[in-house]
Image 1 (cartoon, chains in turn orange, brown):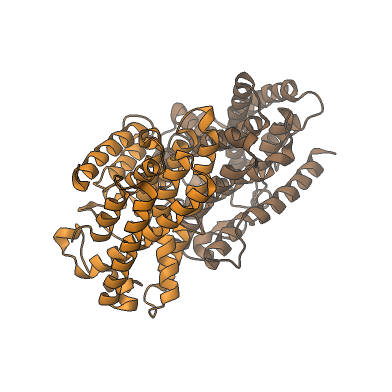
Image 2 (cartoon, each protein chain N blue to C red):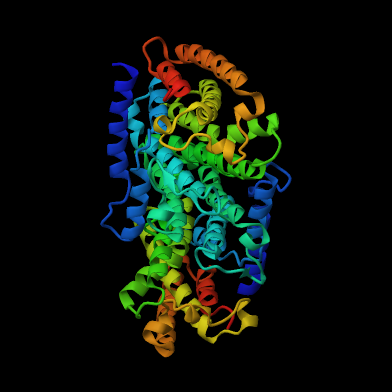
Length: 295
Length: 295
């Protein structure tokens, strides 16, 4: 199976699991559950759950055993988008071509739907994979994911991103933002797959380092796309980061150097992926997909 | 030791643990960590962590082993207050006599500090109590606390509270709001103490049911205080709920009936506490404290 067919099939599997994991629309409180589902089923690529499953297989585990736990990553990603889009933060009214949650519903519900999705992730991670034998992996999963998306990870990156907006380009600050804001959850996705596969400490370390580089590649590609993409290929307006005065890779290093850096990291990642999973895994193809998506 | 001296000593213990658990002010991202600490160290009574510790002892466990995990309850309680106070929700500018987080800092930081405190709770619950033998209790703790404060618990109660505001008194709706908005986290505090003490399923059920009644008593007492308290005894303006058109016990049943119901529940709780812990525990005194605080 080629990578695109593989990703399409994975997306279907993940979507079906998200459908099961999320509280039904017709249960109390209905409007909240509707808003949560509206946000989750808004057309995401499911990169994080897929990454966790592919990493799990690369680490010798069964990706179907971690399907629900992998969905927790998507719930967290969705919560972060809802809160990012709020009027007090990025004030976005469109996301993937649809009204954002605070526009489709209202601002109080958007805040609370984000809170509920973040919380739901830990309901899922606390119970999946099931069974007493998996209990210590579940506890570790809660810890590693929470650490990645808390104040020293994703949320910290959002705070620094806000503080850096409109300021002079600063390479150190850029790296901190990228590592934390987008990189941490992507890195945690890879690490979660390995931890739930039951790897030893040193293998876990390798997967974690791989995930960190992959997160960086993802973000550099995103920054480049903001400059070079079209509205049709992006599904959102290009040039938004530039217009908002955001600190990005092309803004700090220039477009050519950003592309060069992405090529360099991608080559390293591809080689590392082959070592981690052998020649027939999907991690290496996923690296190429992430580094070159939509171009 | 009388109950007030006991509570004062417990508060000190919990505050010292919160100090250790929260990321230091001088670590990245500083402004976020400052805001988190500003909110947590704003003079809370620490009812939830203390309740968890007292329940743990009543269930035959060591409250000192669950000190950090109990702190997670306070982090979640604090996050819920920060988000509740936001302009889009209750729009409160004062909390415990100090400016709320979005006033002392700004709205984006208040949203993100709330997110980070909620997340921090699961960092703590995923790691404490430490050790492989405690792993399945940690995973269960993440699950039970998340379930209590997610869409079917605390956040759901906030959504329904918003929807009910200004509407006609409705007894069924009132009970749903109270059970979820305040009751669920208090019930989870009691249940967490029992689960981390390692009780069997049926004992856990008894503690959970006790916690649910206690949560209800807490909320009825709160509603009564809003009508009968003074600004000095409450530390906030009395009559706020009434003015805001909130659905409360006195609004639905009248003040006399609300008091009667509180007396009835308290008597049942006191008897049940004695059965759960024997004559020398603190659970029964805590019931009296919660049902009659500040009057």
